[in-house]
Length: 252
Image 1 (cartoon, rainbow, N blue to C red):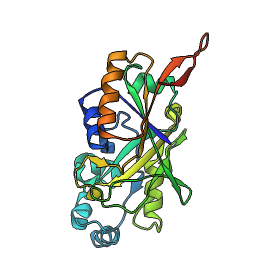
Image 2: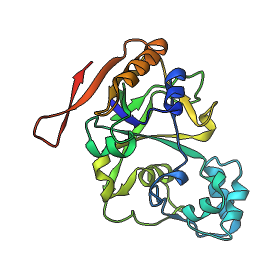
Image 3: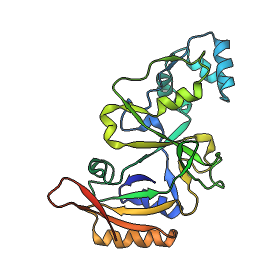
Image 4: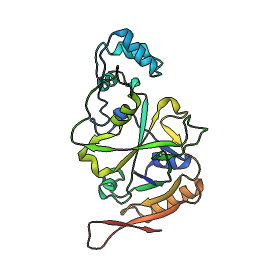
């Protein structure tokens, strides 16, 4: 299972109705140092074109031309946002994280959605509706690594392991974020039919956990919304463990 902390708002309601999850462009993350893609590019124009062509980039000449101003991938993306043509949906491996409830679930007034995963090739994976997403199945999720210093810079022109190293860059964060216990689903934008939302397969949504401060009225209304659009979803609430700075889950 993986968990997504959410505020109770129109966007969450839309995702529930449509059985979708939202993906974000990494350039819009709340941490500007997140996804620090530490590639640099040194080589002449023809060599750059050849490298980007090998990577399957349609606008390989445009990428090579962008390098006239920058040789760092992140700097290129800042001036050319369309180049960051992938998106990420973020989850946690924990449902009882007090800070996550505070930061991402409206100060414990929101919810935490529980999603089923399957195991394949050593990864937790999500299953998407193949009528909505053009992707190999299942889609692997990357566990975030937390470090003190950014990964070493790599000359992308000469590396033989571009995709693997790109995954490392996209799943590495500053150690101060370690409390999130994050796991990420990364998807090229070209795979979406209804970007930035991706439809899940039926019954991937397994549970809804209400926050410590979610009102009873909100619980009733949200249960009705979920039951109208999903089957076999279990509802829970978070409560405080007496005399402790901890939360525990109880079934509704």
